[in-house]
Length: 355
Image 1 (cartoon, rainbow, N blue to C red):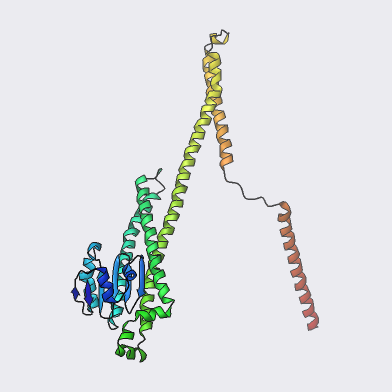
Image 2 (image 1 turned 120 degrees about the vertical axis):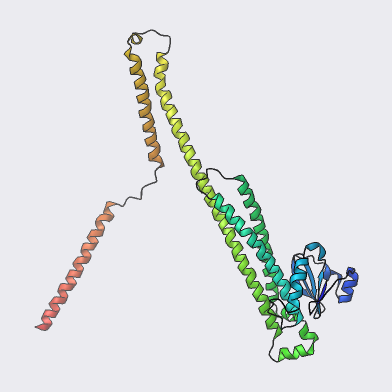
């Protein structure tokens, strides 16, 4: 797809060998093997933003292999109007390559912003459901959703990092910024305007810095989401540990109760043996032995619970030695005595002076 300065679009099919010969490029210039790249070759700007492949010249913009990338909406509804001056581009008064670069960078930033806007509410909703302290267990489906969103967030952070590094490499080299200003070297009139006050290199630098700053803001938002996920994972683990401790303590209490009943149940076992004694003839012995069993079991269980409570209570603050407690008032008394001596000495001197 070929777009000129007025936004008029034409379509054609051509072999790669014919295309790079016509543009004066080499075969490796049209490989587009990098995730993102901005380079110049033979007064041509070669750009790749993820799947978008473009070649910019001072007269037109070429979009390569766009049919299988679902770019028709952006190409026909936004890009054509932006290049013709109907959009919101701030570089419309500058040469054509400025408008083309800004349009492509704006498209890339909008795609990254859209991905972040899609992930953010999903992550917040999932975290809000997972960190609820009322839940005794974690929903596995929510964890699966959080895992998928975490992977998408990592991919977004990688794309933002590559975007920033690519632009930063150009900003660090003044020669690369100069090479991006194609019309400055092909059109003498543009060169004269540049020397008379309009520095296109500075305009290109400001343009790249603007989109670098936007990518930095998106990276900060993604980093905040990552920190929020890490903090929420800590809260989830704390809640699970708390519920686990409650269950372990309940299990321990029930075990101690079973032990207490079993201990005094030996009395009933002894009386249940097929042995004859004078005690089984008294009808009150059954209730007496049963009462002793339950009372003894209850007392042992309470003692075990109190022992457990003492060992699970938080430790007390360190004890302050008595020597330190006594030394503080003593030091205070010495300080008061010194101040009183100074006051009396001052009064005596003033009295002598008056005399």
